[in-house]
Image (cartoon, rainbow over all chains, first blue to last red; front, top):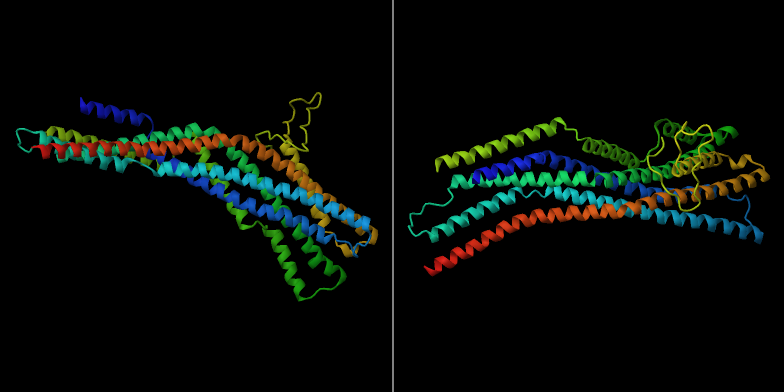
Length: 305
Length: 138
């Protein structure tokens, strides 16, 4: 009867999905999610600076040829800068709010990571082993015959502990699978939004780089060449400009954010489509083998009894 | 590529263009978000060209016009950026309660798993106490 109950429990747990596949999948997705969120937060910080610098550099380039002495013109210039400042303050605040939201996504993936890492399997096996010892001890003091035969033999105790470990792992896996399935729509939506934030931040960073490149070309390359005022430094400046133009000028943070975004999309697509990789199938098979071995050990222990 | 969501724009929004008569369904609708992205890209392209101008090659009148254009385009970019970011932040903050609830559920699941082992250990501990009491009574 007891054996039948255990086997029924195992069968039920197996129906909920194989634990190690769910654990690995959750670890993959949570790791990628944390990396993606952190990369986006880094890009937001750069975008805030880039949007302000781009405005300042353009205004520096376009400064009046002579100091402005007319009071009306001074007031107009001040009003113009204040308007631009207000907009930049507002966009910086909005970027910070977006960063806070992205941190919220990071917190979710960290909680998921902790859940994936928090398998109770080992602790359950130890606890069940301890419980068997206690039952034996209690049986010993209650045993009026006093022949010293343990209620649960060492062999049987080992088999029960191993089984309870597997059952706990299955329960853990089932919880993870259910969590991913339940949260998929929410996470999918926030990932799309996070991609929009990343794109907006990237555009600000790129625009600043393009403007800087345009100023550099005019001021250091084509300008001096046009007027014939070139020297050895011009050779270096021209090389720098052309190499940057040819090879692109993505800062490291942008590149890593794009890589994280790609990884995230791949992992997430796999989660949603329910595809199994070779690695996952191997893990699933290993788990099945362990389960069969544990059941066999329990059976053998009962026969010996 | 058009983004799959419609982001509402709260301030200075660019309204979604209505489908043209006779062409309804011929082309995918462009969201306000996509329109803002396009407007910003166009302004940034203009800004890059203005940044590539050599100020020394301009007459005083041209310089003044160019300088004025740079400042106007800079302000326009900042305004479009704000509209764009406000649309995203509104959508994001609308989604946040959902993600916070999911985080809380994940934390609760972890706590439940730990509790499960704690219960077995507690039962084990009680049995140990009972065993000691009985042994003492013998």
